[in-house]
Length: 125
Image 1 (cartoon, rainbow, N blue to C red):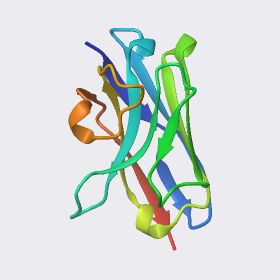
Image 2: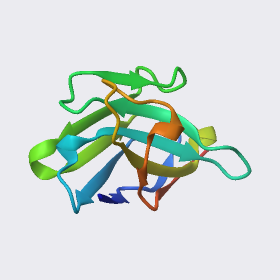
Image 3: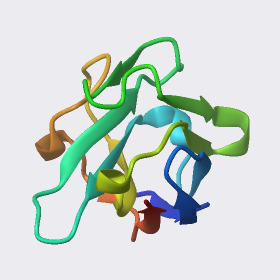
Image 4: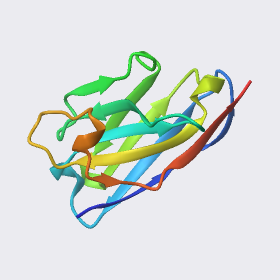
């Protein structure tokens, strides 16, 4: 089992940037495909980005392509989400998750077994 803790959230103006981190403990992160999801108030949780075990494959929601970058440092047991050009509608709790799946990369929420508590990102207009 792996425990995940996110950090790096905060308040940023529209057009600004943030870098989220997801630190893992309990088991080595290299075992898992990783993903970032977000949930805005009153909305369902949605997929943001995913990365394969080795970091050579990534996938993004269409709404964040070209602005967000997911990466991982398995030696540091950490996954990152770099976000640029943030928009007010992207205000949400951002959570990282680990998928113990044999697939190369996981994007479906149901594949992720372990979740962090989330970090709040607020984008002001």
